[in-house]
Figure: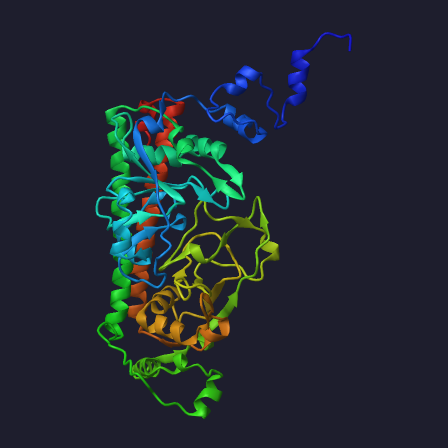
Length: 478
C-alpha cells in the first residue's frame, strides 16, 4: 500500500478486459440521458468518433401506432409496415402484396405518420438488438403505407445529409453502434424518440451525398429487375399449365361420401371443396402428373436449432420469401452437428406453419449450407426429372397454393403443413425446356437481387470510409 500508484501497470492489467475507467466528468460526456449502466460505457462505444450534428436538429422524427380495431384477415387496403419488414434495405413496391393491410378508414386516422417518398424508417422496439435499429428506405413508387408503434419515420430537412446517405449511415457500423449503445433492455429492447433524435450524424458534401443517392437508386433498379424476372417465371408456368385465367368453382354446398372422408383421413368440409378436385384433374389431364413424394429424396422439417456465436446461418419462416431465401445480418447462426437436416445448395425450402407464411416456397441458391428451424421443410428432388427451382415456382403458383390450402391442418393461427401432406401434392412435370426456362428466369432474378444487396453494402461502406479516411477515398472505391 505504501508503493506509489503505477498507472502503466494498472492499465496493462486491464488490457483485454471489458472494463472502462472514467471520472465523474468523463461519465457525463456524450451522456444526455444520465446513464449509469456499465453497458453504456463499453470500450467500443467510447471509441466512437464525435459527429457535429444531432439527428433531431435536421429531421422530423415520429413513431407510428398499432390500431386496435384492425382486421387481421384484410388482403386489400393500406400497407401497415411491421418490424419484420425493415431489413436494412430499400422496400419494394412489387412486394406490397406481402405487407400487412389496414383499411383506408383506419389509415385516415394515422395521417401524421403516412409515409412519403424518401422517408427513412427505423425499428425502435424489438426482442433483440438485431431487430432494434434496423432501417428501411421508402422509394418514390411505394404505395400508400403507414407504420406501427414499434418503429419511427425519419424525414430529413437539411442539406447536411440527404435521406439516402442517412439511411446508409444508420445501417453502417457507426450508426449501429450508437443505436446499440442507446437501446435499453426492458423486457425487450427499446429506443424512444428522444434517443433517436440524439443520434449523432456527420456532414457530407453535395458531391458525396449525390454519389450515395445514385448507388441507392441503382440498387433499387437492380432489385426491381430481379422481381421482374421472378414474376416472369410465375407467369410462364401459369401460361403453360393453362391456369392463368382459370376460375375455380366455389359452390355453397357439395356432397362427399364417408368412404372419401375415411380415405383422406379428413372430416372437415374445407378439405373436399370441388376446386381442389378440379385442380388435380386439370393437372392429371396434362398426362404428366406425379405425386410429389415419389420424386423426393428428402422431405423433412428441421428441428429447434442450437444457437451459437459461430456456425451456419439459421433459416426460419420469415427468411423464406416468395421464391427467395434471405441470408443477411438478421440470420442467427447455429451448430450444424445438432441439426436433423441441413439445407444444401439446390434444395427447396418451404414454410410449414403460420398464417400468411404457410406454404411459401423458395429455391436455395446460396453457395453455403444452412440450418432449417422446426418451421421450415426441406424438399430435395431425387434426380433431374424435377428441377428444384421449377418446383418452388410450381408450389408458389395457384396450382401449388390451392394444394397448401387443401392439406393444411388447424385453425385460428395455429396451422400446420406437415411433410406427409406435402408428399401428397400432385405436381405437373413440365417438359424439360419449360423447366429450364423457368430456372433461368429465377436465377437471373436471384443474381439481380444479389447485385442490389452488393450496391447497398457498397454505399454503407463508402460512408464508413468517408468517416475513417476521406470522401475522396470513399468515392474512389471500385
